[in-house]
Length: 78
Image 1 (cartoon, rainbow, N blue to C red):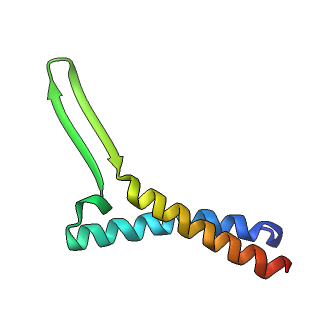
Image 2 (tube, helix red, strand yellow; image 1 turned 45 degrees about the vertical axis):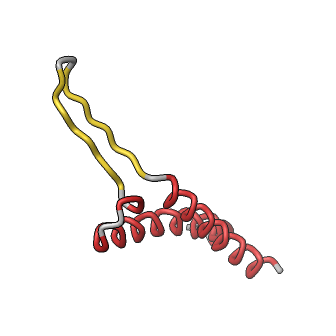
Image 3 (cartoon, rainbow, N blue to C red; image 1 turned 90 degrees about the vertical axis):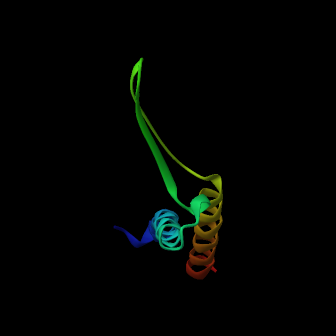
């Protein structure tokens, strides 16, 4: 991992860490809009599995990862 691209790696890592932390907080406090959801059932047409996540943690993770990228970018180059 080269130091030239550290702000990009930090941004990607921050995105996934915020999603993981949001899931843990949502699971611990039973906040449904912070958690991932899954649905599985067997219907007449076969097995159906659906998984997803609310938009709120994704938007929050994007904002936090952008702030981390911007902070690291300005710290390294200015």
